Image (tube, rainbow, N blue to C red):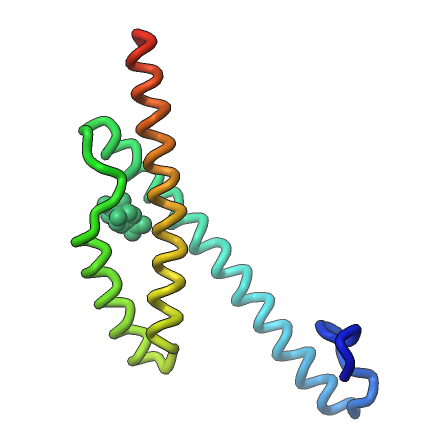
Amino acid sequence: MNESNFGETPRSVGPEVAQRLSVLRQSIDNLDASLIFLLAERFKCTQEVGRLKAANNLPPADPERERQQIRRLRRLAMESQLDPLFAEKFLAFVIQEVVRHHAMIAAARNGTAENGG
Ligand SMILES: O=C(O)C(=O)C[C@]1(C(=O)O)C=C[C@@H](O)C=C1
């Protein structure tokens, strides 16, 4: 397969392989949709955490909580035959974005407070 075939069903395979590939890709699409829905729900929770933290002058990040989450997710990943390093990197990637949101919420709140609102 050359580079221009990436992402396409290879034309050289038989109907059984093409059918299996299609079924697997349908599941992958469903799982990707689930991941998006789950992430959206997680961000709704963390946005509320961000508002709670900003209102109570708590720092955006909580390193001790993150250490606990990493320990737990690494264990869950190993139990599920998922690479624990990948799980850790994925969590770090998500939390980095959450902390950025928290900081923006706090900055917006402080700006508002300074302007008397
Ligand atoms: O639990 C918190 O304090 C959060 O702000 C949520 C969260 C997370 O996304 O899970 C994000 C930042 C913190 O450093 C730890 C955890």
